[in-house]
Image 1 (cartoon, rainbow, N blue to C red):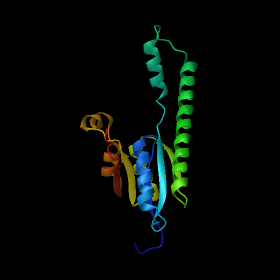
Image 2 (spheres, one colour):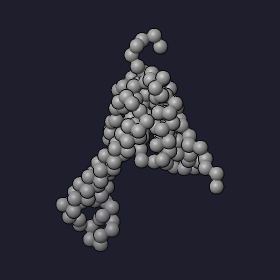
Image 3 (tube, rainbow, N blue to C red):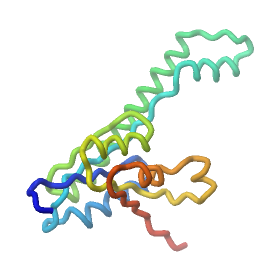
Image 4 (cartoon, rainbow, N blue to C red):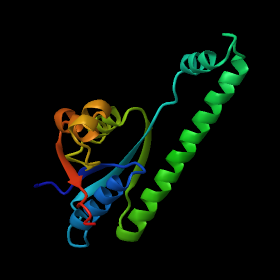
Length: 172
């Protein structure tokens, strides 16, 4: 690259060990003292809480009378939202600790709400990234079909190169 401006690498991160491995692998291979060609942006996709009507439906199915107290449902939603924020804060702290231990220059850590597939592709666009790094959970075909694959979706829809880092299998 002829310009002095650093390219951007976006790394998707959540609280799964596969993504921690992908981040550490990226730091080891792309962010050594002699190789600082990228600005690192680490993105965590915080899930959205289920809609209030879903709580109402679940609770009303479990209660003998179909009536439910709206205040109770909103309390459940409030606790769920607070828990999701707490988990996202913990994930961000873990990312900062990993980066602080292995990286001298600053990394940008962003927590964005939404589905990880959309959040990561949006982050690529926002930062005009040239590389997106995601971890692989190692799901088989059936689990991928049922749960979906963030890495597969990003590989097809992100407007940059996508590196899928697979954690080595452990021998028993």
